[in-house]
Length: 212
Ligand code: TYD
View 1 (cartoon, rainbow, N blue to C red):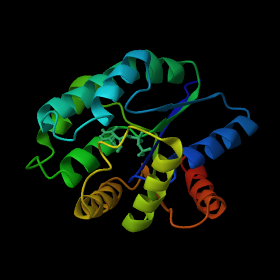
View 2 (tube, rainbow, N blue to C red; view 1 turned 60 degrees about the horizontal axis):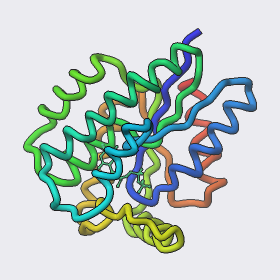
View 3 (cartoon, protein in one colour; view 1 turned 60 degrees about the vertical axis):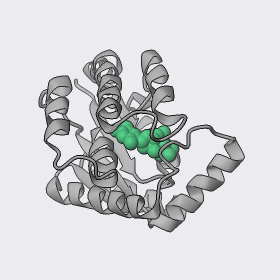
View 4 (cartoon, helix red, strand yellow; view 1 turned 90 degrees about the vertical axis):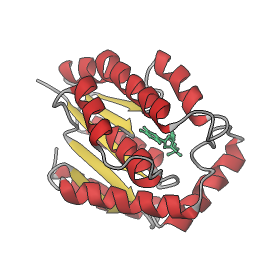
């Protein structure tokens, strides 16, 4: 039996990692084999690509170089990790996937006129493969950023390349994600991520169960 591919999306500080862990626990409790992974950086090579992408100055390369790196990471991730695991019957939970590229690089950055290049690149690396379900954690922009900076302070992270951008970016990002969800309601589960971890999880798991 084939496994499933479930992706988690949202702006910075939406609380994805905590929710992914809880969903993984739930799936294991009902007997599924689960792997948790992420983009960028879900493979060994991907970790090197991740470092190039998330550390340093935000203008260190342009938007074309940037998306090529994201898609290189995604291709390796798909071929080496996601597809083999699904073929072994596992449930693969990914912290971010292709919707992140559309949301951040198209809606957020505003540097592409349309999604054509991104859609083409996705087709090249993945064909018509897509997630079985995508959880969108929808958080208010200011709350998300507050959580995100607090986490960065306590973990002393260098990964601030995508956080150091203006508020309007994050507002576009949030609206962009909601638009993506509206276009593909069969795949997306939209969850209000402004509440406590427990409350968010309750809403999330009830909605996700209908897609599993
Ligand atoms: P992530 O580790 O999920 O960061 P966070 O914990 O802040 O959610 O992702 C790293 C950053 O990379 C994040 O700011 C979003 C960005 N990103 C893109 O811009 N495009 C993409 O395609 C992906 C996968 C991530």
